[in-house]
Image (cartoon, rainbow, N blue to C red; front, top):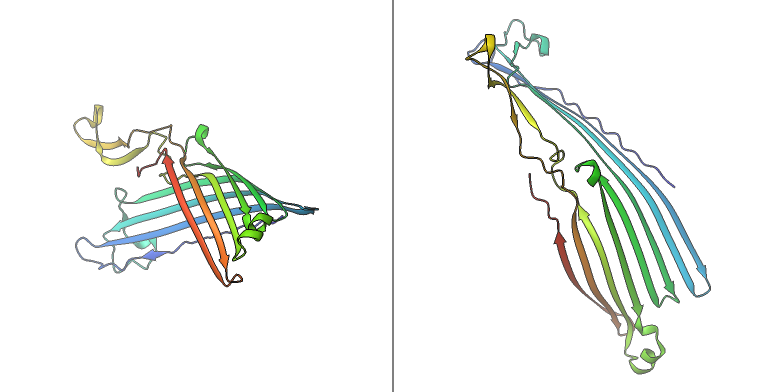
Length: 262
């Protein structure tokens, strides 16, 4: 087995160069910190029993992502005080300074089983199940199986005796179900945006604007993986003592539960 992890930290301290002591002068600070981790574990098996050949693979993949994005604006910097730090940059503009945080992750289990008899009759079964935090907990998991069969027709006696000018002919027929989670996260929850001047005050604040919350789009808890049924027919040919090869493939895809940008 193997395990690989990636740690990526990135925090650029980017300050603007303001025109200090001028009307409307402003200092801006942009900072981003991100952390990505991924772990993989594999088990492989390969063995031959006479004319029977079997190989298998099982794997687990886990990934997590964390991101913090900050934007801070400072008003009215003073040239005699400002030295490139936040404490000397002026007055923090709380209405236009924001911090965005994101957390997400995926977990996948996958496996593959291959079998062939004399290298002539070929079979493959694949299966993976994936979980994504882009969806509600009851819809985390998507199931994606696939099968494939192949026949090396040119190894059959009837083919060799009657079509000797074709050196190789193989027919392939895969069928698989795949999916995507490409929808913005947390859209299954009701989200709100806070603004310091969008709320209407009552009581002692009656008649003035205060902090208010604006609801985002209506949540859809039923969001789940989109699904693509993939069908393929393939033909491999070789002629002139295998000096000329031809491959033909035809694909048919059907997509359901399509996700749209939200």
